[in-house]
Length: 543
Ligand SMILES: Cc1cc2nc3c(=O)[nH]c(=O)nc-3n(C[C@H](O)[C@H](O)[C@H](O)COP(=O)(O)OP(=O)(O)OC[C@H]3O[C@@H](n4cnc5c(N)ncnc54)[C@H](O)[C@@H]3O)c2cc1C
Image (tube, rainbow, N blue to C red; front, side, top):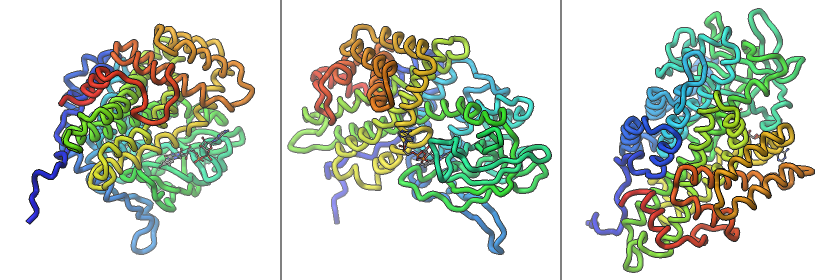
């Protein structure tokens, strides 16, 4: 008989309040104007931090979606079946409006602090089950494009913004709530979407679309925004799962992607065989039409990555507080404290950066400077935060020793999930090219944003030099060779400023170790003070 207690293992981490236990989150919510949401966020944090939610997340990822391309008699079905746990998460997120709360029912921006409040919720949700956020994120983003065609898409927008999840497979007109996916990537190119080969030909009432998409997530969405070529160039189309006459539209799912992570979410390869679609935006303006949507999905990638990092960090700290090695709890070992505090500093900075970005998005409709700031900080934040996540999660895993590597716990799932946020919705280089392109097109406005961010960071160590370096690269670059330097520095500067303007006690430590200090590649090597480390760790999780 093996003794069950006294094995020096940490207890399971569950039934926690994801909001109340997260001091940097509470600070960021207040600093970015969403303090009135605090009570609602606390209730949300308790609900999503329940042990049951964590268990459901395991079910949703172990029982992956199945493609049913044909029925028993060989007729096409083209449906994907999900485990009930996936539907449970999607219903929860849609009940809370994560797919829609930043819109009015006519597709206008909801009043501030809608973006900040939603980001706080998405950040908590990503800590538990990020995969189902795909249809949530895509639906909210698609509204930005659909709102450009209110006469055509008004009815669909109304259904996309109800807090009602209806997974049934029937025409969108018959449903009260719908979701919308976005398919742009083709076999020959994902970043370079102007090379799309899918064609659209005018037919009665719309267009007939013929071609394929190499990746299309959330395939059970009720409609998809896709890009296809017309004679005028890439054009955006809205393709419903059912044609207006009620027959199933010709979207033929070839296979599901067998993915490293993001396993609760399905992503298909799909062929369009004269599928019916409506045009959104002008012919040839497809890239311009979807750009507003892409900005939003990029922001959500960064929010989600901040959540993944937080989830890994709290697991590591919780474990270190209960596990003893060499006669002392790991969390009391000076070297482990150096590692945990260094991790905590990046996680806090990432959160501060994304929440400040969301404030800019909230204010953009009334404030041109905030609009421009959101435009330039979005790719930089996505670049840095999403690239940070795999390294943070790997180090957090190591803090837990062998336990961190085992599939019974959440670390392997977080680790597998992390890289996708950097790859989709604009990979690193593409984001850097976007920033360079903006600086070329709109130099004064971009430098104005840079000056404002640098000014907001005060005289914190390294900020002036970093701003100078960014300006030099953005204004003098012959080509894109140094663009990553500029974009990383810009993100670090914006994170410093976000922490500083929110009154974080760690803006100085972040600037000193990330902007001014010698470049060091691993966690625990940055010269933080011992008192600072204690304070940083206590902000991560009371205990
Ligand atoms: C799990 C998953 C789900 C997805 N779901 C969807 C979806 O729902 N809808 C959708 O449309 N797409 C989806 N995608 C596709 C994703 O958006 C693309 O993979 C991504 O945009 C990159 O495109 P690509 O794979 O064609 O890579 P490429 O465009 O071939 O890029 C490869 C690499 O080259 C770099 N690169 C490209 N151009 C340059 C340049 N000029 N200079 C320097 N470097 C460059 C890129 O940054 C990247 O690192 C999904 C992908 C994954 C992994």
